[in-house]
Length: 243
Image (cartoon, rainbow, N blue to C red; front, side, top):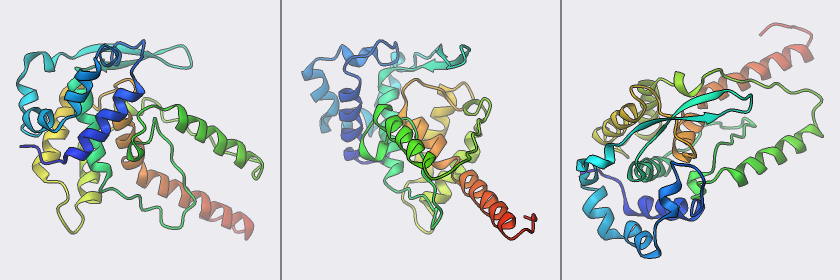
């Protein structure tokens, strides 16, 4: 049995089906074909306890239909991606939602704000509102600062080390007590490896994967970058230029 709660499943499924009731993308199109009765059944406790919590959904052949896809980037090039079955899309969203309930970022007193494609802790599985919040934050800060640093990590998602990611998840979630069993984290890690053919999968409109990559995997990087810039600023203010 996979040990995660029904509330994570229900809130994730409801948020996804509400966000993508109409979509032109192949990955999300099946959700637009569900009837109201279909949605209620998928959200139900009966479906969750019979098919998800038992892991029975993994025994269906069609569940494992995985195919290559491509996402058009802003510079006109293509990013290789993956299309997965709708049930896997719902599962990774729900299990990551479960992870997020135990996760707290340790930015302490640092003025760091992070944005990603949605907000899984608030059951937002569409990036539009959070992208608007990101733009507003930039505009507000542009009134207070004269310079900014733009950093782009080339091929970031394909270079994510899944073993390192899950070491971080285990450390940050289970530090001092067991919130999520190691067995369940191992199952989830191997599932992501399978979906990504051994690497971190790139799946269109996956708020769950964006959360893992941004909030967890990059947290220590964000802290180290913030501290580096802070030390650099102090050295300039004190005319020391040493950091």
